[in-house]
Length: 117
Length: 112
Image 1 (spheres, helix red, strand yellow):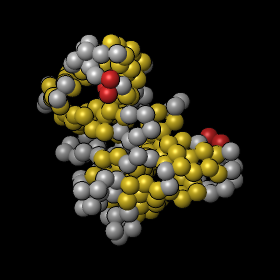
Image 2: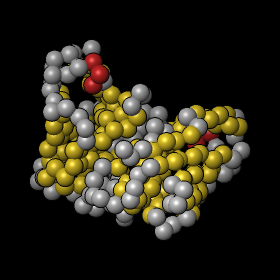
Image 3: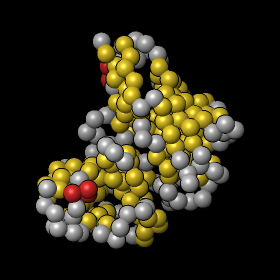
């Protein structure tokens, strides 16, 4: 079974631009979560989707948005990029309705490395 | 505020030696605690998942323990190998369906 895939793997943008990242979950998984990982802040939760509905959202500004499609694929968008948005963006999928549920195991993708110049 | 603190921040050991990583949390009420291994440049991989009723869970050379009373967990690695060099992240979730709280991780380096 194929794992979680994320595209692109690497991305370089300049301040003020916007970016869209894509995540394809493991086949059959309906829950997708997004995380930002930086050396200084560690892993931080962005949002979680289940069946095209956002179930949870982390403490990030409105410039960060996401969506999930009917085939469970998900995208996240960051508008008006800032230098501090440079990070590894990780996507994780799971079978359970809520990420972190008792019986849930999240499977992470390799991440998209975003660099903002 | 829910917090997860991991110690030590980094650790260097020789191949073949054992080590123990610590995770203290304040998340309450508690639902489950997970340990992840993250190799450099890759996404985290789940090692163990424990609920409040479980004290110990093993996955090969990895053994996690949980004391829900003191809100402490540990990850013990036995007979370390070079491939164990990675960041180990502790994640705790409360009973309310919602966000999990992540620790900052412990960076383990295993040297030959």
